[in-house]
Length: 78
Length: 159
Image 1: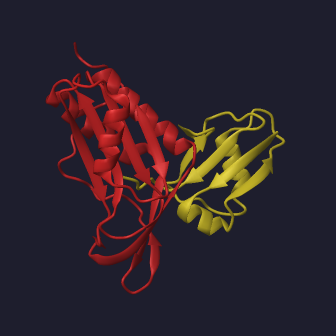
Image 2: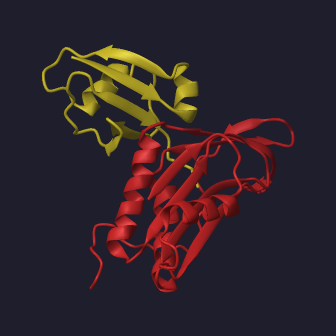
Image 3: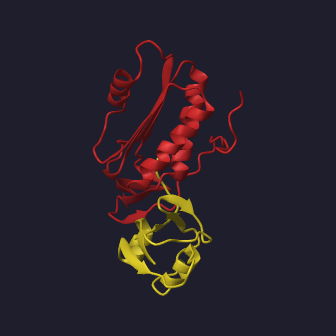
């Protein structure tokens, strides 16, 4: 399956890009699997948040083809 | 309910009046409560000369809208308006406006407080500050406000 991965704020600066397409071959891949797949590029800080299709999510979330997965630091709006 | 996330500066009072005229039935609302968040020229003991506010388009609007709907389920309100900036900001400029209209003030105060508190907690925005020395850094967390009263969004309102 293919997912779109987005990075925001300090995480985007660390990754050197704001978006990438990632192909995962394992069946029922989760956010944790995706993080492991990306770990070669970066160790995410412990306080990293994740959203799948614009909903807050966590490592146990099972992904499906076409999902948009965003990683970002704690939010500081308002 | 209206949620606007925009790059352009805005005048909070003009936004309030324009929305009231366009969306509120004349004479049916008892009042409005508003909160305006303004950019400070200091943070964590440093002088701040400018700020860039980044957001996640789509997710930001969705989560602010949801917070407004939660507030409307919990309190009897007529309407709510949220305007939030992104992009380059200067000290003294409004960052966010929250307005709640209701027949009675208590509901408007409570709903307005709820919306700004949960907007700060959930809406995906990130501040990047530039200090007087010209250095830029990402703000790691919002300053804790000792007066914040937590209301659990999962608990429905009492009758």
